[in-house]
Image (cartoon, rainbow, N blue to C red; front, side, top):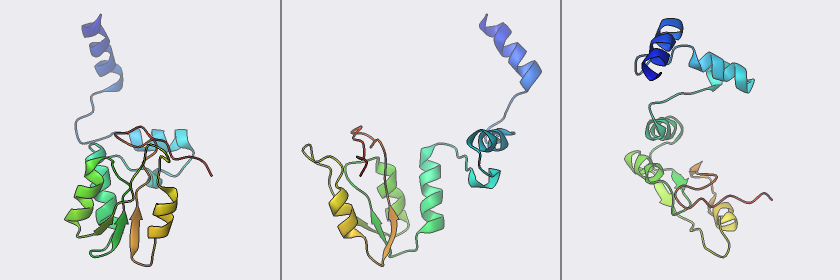
Length: 127
């Protein structure tokens, strides 16, 4: 059944070749009810994180990255010479909301809100 399904798909929908996305951008934008230029598709989360940090954060500005979390946030921030502030999750309080808010200042260019957090699975509580 699998070879037949693959053959049928290729005959009716075509084959997308990496890194082209075909009409995915328009289809997702329509589904989400947003303009297509507000959607960004990347070759994995690492590339997306890297592109956003490169586009939005100037060298020497600050990134608030609650820890522990997905390592790519910090790697991309360090590549762009950002100063990293790391409020820590705790077992008792979970997401460090007060510490994140207290860390924000005029030099802040990025606040990472990973919800639920990777790798801990900790959610950010609603206010």
